[in-house]
Length: 133
Image 1 (cartoon, rainbow, N blue to C red):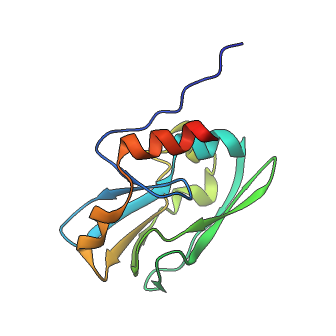
Image 2 (image 1 turned 180 degrees about the horizontal axis):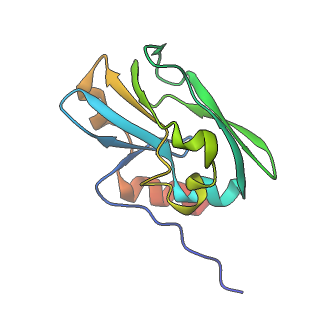
Image 3 (image 1 turned 60 degrees about the vertical axis):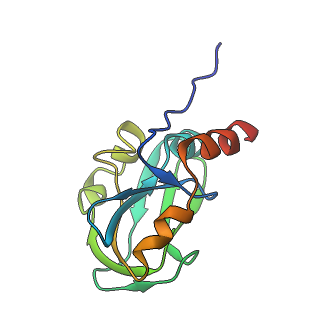
C-alpha cells in the first residue's frame, strides 16, 4: 500500500512541532496542526484549547489533542493573546482529521511581535522535516 503524502499548503508557515500558522491580519494568526500531525495521531477524539484572553509564550503548551493512539500537546508557535478558539472542536474533534487546515483550526492569536511569523518554517522546509518522520 502506497503511503499517503501529507498536504502542505504553500501559503502557510510551520513549526517543528507540526503546527501551521496562517496570518489573518497584520497582527493576528490562526493556528492548527498539520495534515502530517493529524495523520500520525490517528482519529482525534478530544481537543482541549486555551481560554480567550490567555497570554501564551512561544513554545508554551496551548492545549492538547487526544486521539485513539495518544495524547499530544499543542504548542504556541508565537507569543501572544488568544483572541479566538474553535469551539466547534468541542463537539466535532474529528474536524482536525477531516479538515486540518480549514474547519479543524484551533486558535487565533494576537501576536506580541507580528514580524516573528517570518522566522517560522516555510512549506519547503516543513516538507523536508515531515519527510524525515
